[in-house]
Image (tube, rainbow, N blue to C red; front, side, top):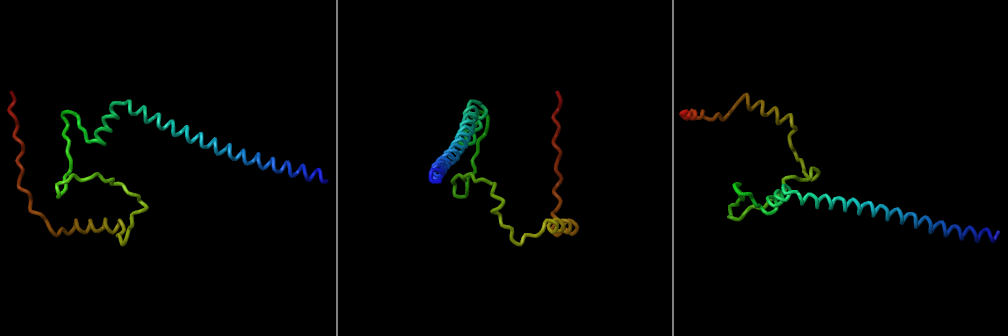
Length: 136
């Protein structure tokens, strides 16, 4: 009985070490797969930089460079300083809707407004048609 108990303890510790090593091996395989995906993404990015159109687009986007014949512009604020670029997209979950009317209420208001216009602008003066060029 004593011999069986010693063998069971011996096998139990060996089995625990085996299971720990197996779990560690699986985590290393996952890490290797992630590294390979990262390497593939970086290689794709490297190939993109060999494309002249991509390089031109990046120069335009990042540095504001323009090609000969193009017109570059920059929006200036009231203080005379250039306005910075801000992303226009936001997280939809972060948008708070407070007391906003339902879409059908807004749509119905436009129908009512179209039926009863309050501020009708004066008709615009007639616009002259462009003069035709003489044919040669």
